[in-house]
Amino acid sequence: MTNTPRRALLLMDYQVALCEEGPHLRMPPLAAQVAERGVLATAEKVLSAARTAGWLVVHVRLAFDPTYTLRTNRLPRFDAYPDQKAMLADSPEAQIVAQLAPVEGEPVVDKGCVDPFVGTPLRDVLAAEGITEVVLGGVATNLVVESAARHASDAGLQVTVVEDMCASFRADFHDFSVQNMLPLFGTVTTAADLLGGL
Image 1 (cartoon, rainbow, N blue to C red):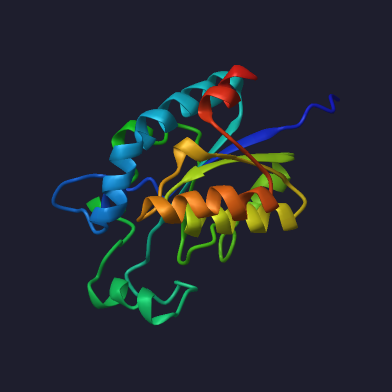
Image 2 (cartoon, rainbow, N blue to C red):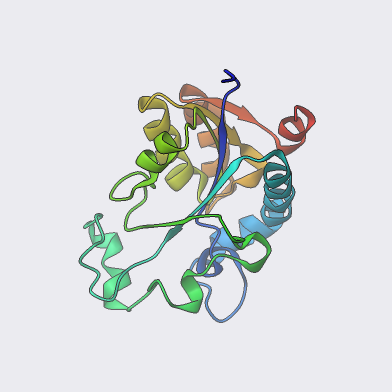
């Protein structure tokens, strides 16, 4: 039995409605930042390396059942989803973007709030797989990524955030999170530095 940390790559909310220009886009400012920062291409490189390295790859997405009762976030800003019948699990808008799509054997975790650990089996799955370190990428930086980093570090996991796999609705939101908040919960790195260490 080796003591080498077992890593998981968590790819969070890289969804059509959030990241892709087109008929299903719900968050134009976020998609604009994703495009400007080259987030999807960077995430694709890291995903490929993680698969080659044998890491556990977990895809996380915001997706709802038809009743919307299973959503855990009941703030008014989340009311738009049931009101508009948006981000249903089977809908085109809720799907993960094609270039980061799961392959066979990669689990997809559906969440009904910001934090990927709340109301999902994610922490139990990581524990069962012997994961000790999570590598995070996703959108938005100051929402799902920051929530995941906080939760994972409190749960005893080592956290690495790949900042150029992340974007927010505004560049200053991303920058503030990367410079001031995320370093409190783990290591912030770039894809180049992460891949250079493999």
